[in-house]
Length: 93
Ligand code: SF4
Ligand code: SF4
Image 1 (cartoon, rainbow, N blue to C red):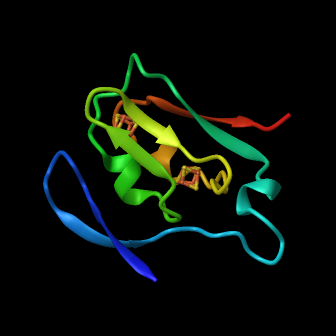
Image 2 (image 1 turned 120 degrees about the vertical axis):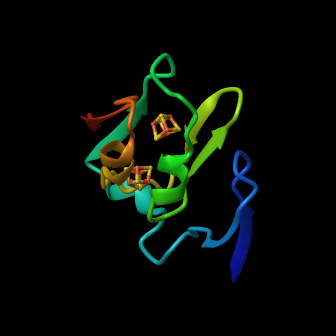
């Protein structure tokens, strides 16, 4: 089922699907890289939340992004779109 999600800063509502546990478990299980946030650099622009293809980032206006690593696939799209270089992709241990 598609849920409507509000982008807080702009007020624009866009339809987004939420990830769920699949037959192979949570999709973050096979991730080999993970994005980490440098909160000092983040300008809360919401681009990472908008562009994440699996809808696992939430940006709070007063804090910045939170990433749900249960379902983040480590694709790096958020890192590529971040205008402040506040996101970095590191290897999983
Ligand atoms: S690495 Fe990919 S899946 Fe994970 S939060 Fe960034 S855009 Fe989303
Ligand atoms: S794209 Fe970068 S600057 Fe914008 S909210 Fe995400 S981490 Fe912060």
